Amino acid sequence: MINVGVLGATGAVGQRFVQLLAEHPWFNLRTLTASDRSAGKLYRDVVNWRLDVPFPENLGDIRISPTTVESLKDVDLIFSALPADIAYDVELACANAGIGVCSNASSHRMGPDIPLVIPEVNPDHLGLIDVQRDSGRDGFIVTNPNCSTIVLMLSLAPLRKFIFSDVRVATMQAISGAGFQGVPAMGIFDNIIPYIGSEEEKMETESLKIMGTLDGKSVRMAPFRVSASCHRVPVIDGHTMAVWTDIREPVDEVKKAFRDYNPPISDLPTQPAKSVQYLDEQDRPQPRLDRMRGNGMTVSVGRVREGIRYVTMGHNTIRGAAGASVMNAELIYTRKYL
Ligand SMILES: NC(=O)c1ccc[n+]([C@@H]2O[C@H](COP(=O)([O-])OP(=O)(O)OC[C@H]3O[C@@H](n4cnc5c(N)ncnc54)[C@H](OP(=O)(O)O)[C@@H]3O)[C@@H](O)[C@H]2O)c1
Image (tube, rainbow, N blue to C red; front, side, top):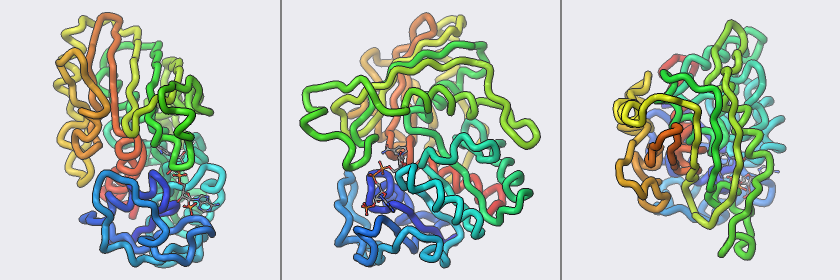
């Protein structure tokens, strides 16, 4: 077993990490950190458990540590769910101290030697860990994309064999994507907010790196364009998006590509039986009905129409955040980087 820790364990994503790691077959969760407001207290006393699954009682007596490298001496791998401004320095210090870092935060995602990975889409980008090691770093940093980008990229993965140069996307994003303090009830109830800070820029840049080509010591960006419009809607979990592409294949060929999709990796504990689920009903996918497919790790696709246009949806704190990081760590483990 690999000893692991979670940074930011009390937050929306941190709680999902705790849920997914509580019974993990390869990873032994021993350290939880949060801000100085929480440090020193028992996890059960300080966490405001808001998930749709029972609190993992076996972890309740872990005492929250401060978020410092010194607190992480007993672990080989950490999962970071810290706010981006805090994450940058802490993650770097941990990686330089020999710890593996799997991060949800955006701080390092676009760094030239940092893998930005979705296991089904670009597992070979983990080769950038060797570049980090060659530059003298004992540990490593591996990131997963922004929660909307992951859903968009997984939905496009079965379509990579077709030619496209232009992808447009309008998102309808859940309130859990803004963290626990993120959206006041008075702002989101009976409302839609047509702006999410930096979200459109993240979708437009991260996508090109993820579908780019690992070329020696860096990633050559993919040669297509993404144009995004991001909106917050009153849904608890699950980001839905309408996607327009310039793919000119017949609709039936595209539906077949979704149905037949087989990712290039298999047998990771957190990997769902189907990474992409095509739904034929004309009013699907819907967050309430479809977000827990594959334990929250399956991205659903439907409403494929000429254009090619379609609708996709995935669970933002599981597939879009904690589950993505845990699956990256599983891939890293099988590739012997731990
Ligand atoms: N929510 C999503 O769907 C989603 C998806 C993908 C990526 N992300 C990214 O994941 C990260 C966490 O997001 P979240 O939604 O879980 O946020 P959140 O609910 O606000 O949780 C933030 C966590 O960070 C801790 N923290 C805050 N300030 C700190 C400090 N100065 N030092 C140490 N710890 C500190 C908090 O601890 P206290 O409880 O002690 O304050 C809490 O555990 C962010 O970078 C976010 O962009 C989120």
